[in-house]
Image 1 (cartoon, rainbow, N blue to C red):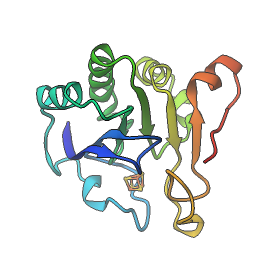
Image 2: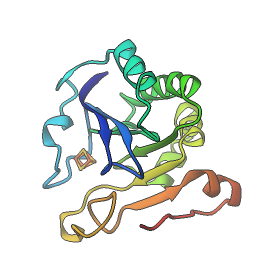
Image 3: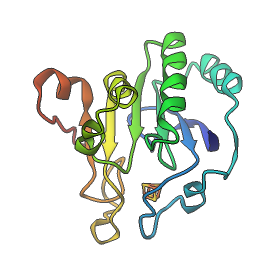
Image 4: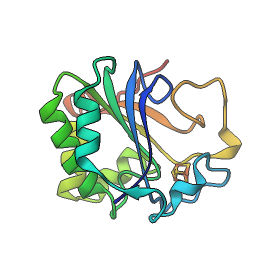
Length: 167
Ligand code: SF4
């Protein structure tokens, strides 16, 4: 898997200061995508796991880690993202974990794929849905268009219904 970019500290990709990993490759091709280069699976550089783990381990400012893209949860990327997530969580269990995806939560569950479901159970917050230009709203926090949802995954699994967060 290639990495399109990294932010060591960001406050616009989830709540609080966060380390952000933008993976390369996305099958959705949303019109007016803000990260068009990252749609290419060959864009960026090959994942350097040790570098990412070291940077996160040595960062005392961050409160969480966000996976974005590109598409972290497409079939080509999901297993590598899950593996990386588990290594980061083992090292920094106190952090909270967000993931952006162009799929809806329902689409991901209906895959019936063990890795995808396991990953969803390890993530705290999922920002789901494709970017839809007609629904773009620059006033929204942490998402680009109003169809997208910020889902509290822990409560969603506990309560067996989708629990959204609003900011
Ligand atoms: S899901 Fe995200 S990265 Fe993929 S095309 Fe849509 S806006 Fe771009």
